[in-house]
Image (tube, rainbow, N blue to C red; front, top):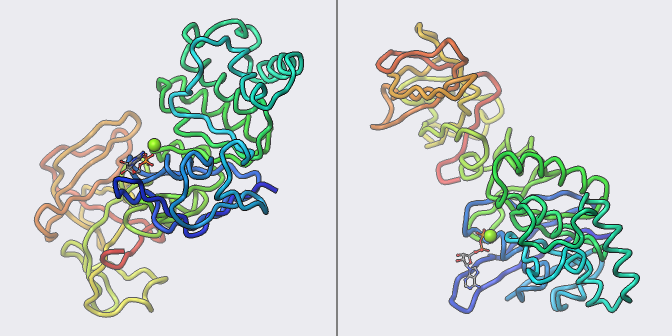
Length: 356
Ligand code: ADP
Ligand code: MG
């Protein structure tokens, strides 16, 4: 068993930065798990603390049944792939892959065999005698993965494994990484600041902010039901519309319009309560004619994104500057200056308490 369990995990750097703040997290055995969050939220620190490259200031880390909080990296049975791959430039591909086996005191022949075998699995056989400087970015990344795989760790830790590849290679490497993880079945934690990458790859995602976990769930769960406005704003290719609203007589006042109160929250909301109304641009329908129960406004920007456009409206009746974005299919785009109506699709709206 190589589940990873973190309890009350805290990391305060000597300069006083609290990079992990009493964090609780459980990663299941064999899971492909994403740590997602903006730059500086503590993703790398969490990965390094699991690896033992940083010493926790408080709390615990378990791998399977083993308490590893105070073990050195070499005793944790984890392998980490760094964002910049950290290959040894003076060593060949073969020597790079075999390096951890040398540390483990495997004999020369065993090392060569294991390196050749791992290189073969990753399609690197033809490159064994090259040095990192003679490889493309994608090939270097595979060497870094091969080096991590060579000693069959219980846990893989990957820090932004795809961020140094160009857009086309990144898509290819995504598919490759997902297939590799499926085949190996090793518990894998990968860090990313790219929500699309996390949604596409992960079995489950933890969304982090300021050293804390704001939500853990499957890609579908965090996309459909973000637990708070932070996650709502972070997940999705276009940011969710988050509009101030107020509860009134079983209805919602949103930007000067009365909308029906969603069934699932009706009992939890009191009259006059300040709320935030959330709806994704994909789940709003645009109409050039008045529609009951729609928000109306003036079109300010029309962004052509290929098969659809992202249309921004200044919503009449909202607080100054309240704007709403809506996805409009190709050929149905309005012009800036037009008056338009947007209708939320039933069951696709979310409601948050102010400050949630
Ligand atoms: P992320 O990987 O999500 O971008 P990091 O874990 O690298 O975030 O950093 C989290 C916070 O800790 C940031 O405020 C960063 O400046 C700080 N930090 C990271 N490493 C160190 C360090 N070695 N010493 C002091 N502060 C650090
Ligand atoms: Mg980082």
